[in-house]
Image (cartoon, rainbow, N blue to C red; front, side, top):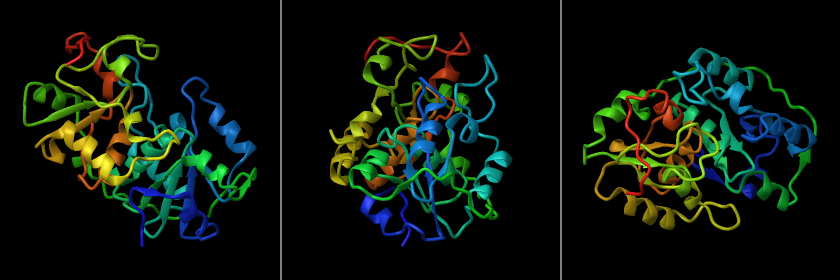
Length: 285
């Protein structure tokens, strides 16, 4: 049995020490890019390797052309996965300390983009693991390298040009995964331009979680997304956020709900606003 969306802390606990399982700690903070590694070095799930959002899960930023977290170069990402001991036979589990909303869902999406389906996010993440009293360590983990062979699925991606073409196409649904205030153009503290892409609907990723930081039930998630999507098919659904990271949380939730695989506008808002020719709006739709 492979896990392809979420896994509980107790299910993961039962696999600790399994050589065919790779746990990746993705803790990261936008306010302090070094904090995730510091936290990992202090304490982490036994056997987990560490992934840094900026260094391992993103590519080179080109000022004025890319967003804040462009996709990693494919060759570099393949080498990273191989170095972590990931091959076609491995079950990968990712975790962070933000309900999967930061880099854990990003890595989940990246691996699926690369054709590796046996990847799941730890439901509740590091807090859930710690609250259950499951084993932790401060040992820096290394794994025997394997050969990761990509099977690129570019049908999961959506480009800036594609977004521009479907802005007025009612057969598509564009969804903004940021908080509602940022969507409305209020309280923008991360990107230099506030607002959202015209026609996009607000779908904050936080709406996927309960008060304990756990994902809502499949039925609850299904109801949430069906209300947002209407009759639009999943291949015509595009999610974006500030830099292509938290949008993956919505993609994960939608997949977990059994509604299929939507697409990611990976460059997202921080790339969209690099050109003054691209329209923006600051009013709620």
